[in-house]
Image 1 (cartoon, rainbow, N blue to C red):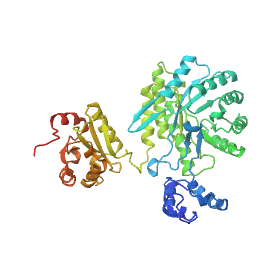
Image 2 (image 1 turned 90 degrees about the vertical axis):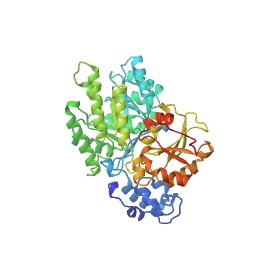
Image 3 (image 1 turned 30 degrees about the horizontal axis):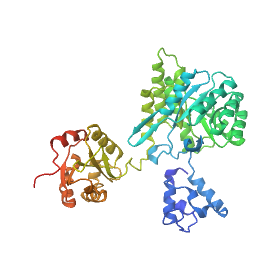
Image 4 (image 1 turned 30 degrees about the vertical axis):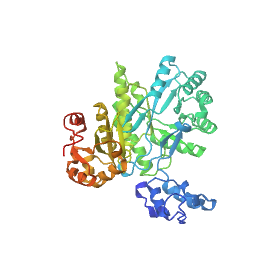
Length: 471
């Protein structure tokens, strides 16, 4: 049943009903509500794990399991989860697992190029409103067709990175050489086709690795292949329907949309698995300048991220091509039910002293990081008092009464900012000006209305702020 159609009552009926509180909730109904929102797991209900409750457990799992199966790749702290999604569109519920971005290397690359590409994968990092954006996987491709070369390339890759691996070879003998070098890393095997599926399936079972089913531009063949692999005993499958160059963008989007629609809304057997996209296909089109290939690949990547892929493989490693992709997926894969927020409290910026200004903002992540960045950039040593506004921006929080004079006064008291500074002067955002009088009355602090935009904080503090106003 699609997640958006479940109600806590349906789940509650299948729970033991003991209200034992072992799950951390006050009663079984509260736990049922958390299960529906995917904020808890069935394993947290200890009575349900009793062997005598197996039937109840299985019935609940049938209701709660994601329409798109979650497939684990890699091991330990670097393990990735592909898929595990419940709905077609983000606003219906939320997306849970960002599509993994894999950079490729080939077994015929020179050492310098090979190592440079792996280092880009390892070192790519960008701080974005409190989130650290990075790349996820290394795809090792057999371009030589030589088992020994592929085995050496995989061994080298495993030594250079702890990120999860995808091993790409259509010859089972070549693939076996790669698996011999890195099977303990639980790599993603690419790929089983209608010609080699049995031998690839045997390798996947032998090494307990997930397997890609590939049937380019043939959705019926892809479904048939997935069902065949299921019947053979493969449980962790990723579907590759093929990716065409950018001139066939419409066909790409249609293909991925149909597959995800049929899996979630149609609940078709054999299609409830993560989808793989290959923007790297852009490099097969003719172009005089490699930059054009990278530009086309970036377009394909962006389109596939928005259209349900759970893993994409790219060749270009320029920052201008990769950074927009990680921004895009991080924005799509935030929970629309929960604004992106930071912890409320008192944040020192720079090296504040007892005479430094105290400024106010909300805990909406974008607001907080913008304000903090502007203060740091202006080199204004200060304290930033962050009020819990349930993740709303200043103007929205004031309008929706999520930031009030009462909450500000309470934040001043709880933060113990009065122990940090000698003055009693608070600078509030210009967009919260209407609260100034009430804050001053409730808190006993002098309230100064600052600029409408945090970019003006430096000049405001320099020209207008008076920590010890006369009288």
